[in-house]
Image 1 (tube, rainbow, N blue to C red):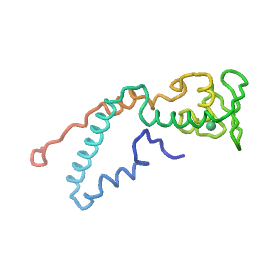
Image 2 (image 1 turned 90 degrees about the vertical axis):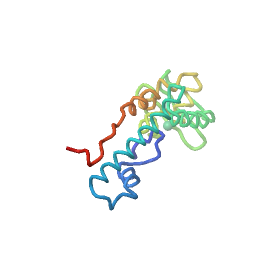
Image 3 (image 1 turned 120 degrees about the vertical axis):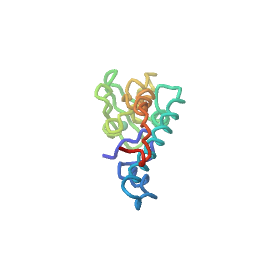
Length: 161
Ligand SMILES: [Zn+2]
């Protein structure tokens, strides 16, 4: 399973490290550590400031994903077995969605933990709130909390004891 992205355009820790160290590989170790600290701090600051500007309850990534799924789900036919279990038919597929378990036979719902197009077909049909079926790490408040801590500055090497 690929890592979750949360609207951050890096896929894994190696990618992040390589990007940070791209121009610093030949530095002495203390300079390399300070360079890394500075870059991580700048990255956290940028993400903190971006997330502070979001007005809605969900991150921009979640909003875009739900809008895309919702649009796609509008073209599907829903057969409800009860209020939370239903079958969704599209042109070449049939999928089963269980909103109690937050699962779908396409596996996107349980993998991303955000409603897939099949789930959105019913959520849209019933005018239910997608937020109810979206995990809390897609909430703006969760992301703000993630980057709330400030990575403090360090003294110059000549000031170290
Ligand atoms: Zn699905």
